[in-house]
Length: 131
Image 1 (cartoon, rainbow, N blue to C red):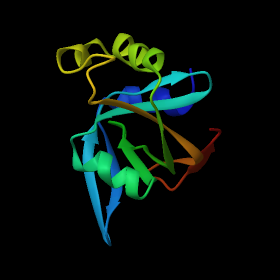
Image 2: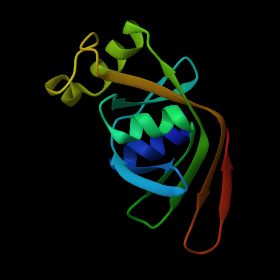
Image 3: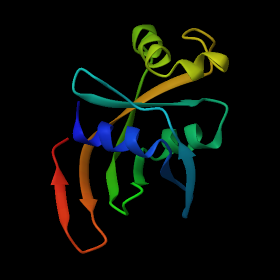
């Protein structure tokens, strides 16, 4: 498993930031999946986060483990409308099935491209992860 996905799964909740005009917006996320070398996330196209990523795809994710290590993942959101990838996310994170289906018209899947990922520790160590 990709070290980034493993880190995000270990934290369970991570925070995704977008840009809304000239203001940052941050919210918790929890679903992540690796497929064909890409790291996928999901959202609802009725939410502000979706509209913000459509307007400006630059996003950043931050996550912290219990030991204080934290991850910063940056890149651009690219939406994938494939029903197969939506179903894969639903299978990976079954709790999503209580809210979405692959063809409900609101479930959206995206991956991050042009990524950079760094893990930091409280003692000042820094590790760049391959994406």
